[in-house]
Image (cartoon, rainbow, N blue to C red; front, side, top):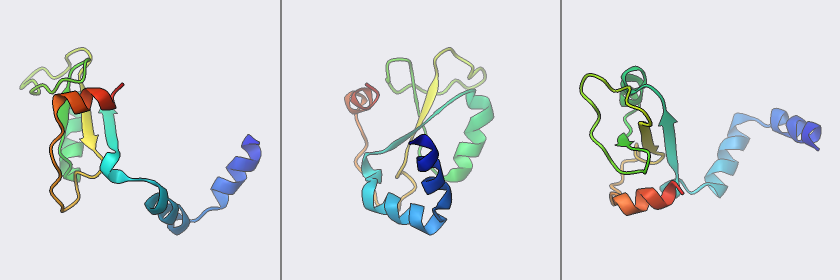
Length: 101
């Protein structure tokens, strides 16, 4: 099965993948999670224009450290649709926690 699936996926064109994604993926309910050293990844994320929310191990929003951003368990969450022109309602800490469970 996996070999057959790989053949199907490899035969698809980018426009086909884009069309399927547009049809089946609701980006208003998606979150891109990036985990790593904030000092190294923050500049690249900033260039993408997404809103970046730093969260702790429990999913609570935290302010990024100014100098030492290598704190244990720190992750960045980037809403998948945050680059959209439309304004979206900001998610509460409770909503972020529920998404991460």
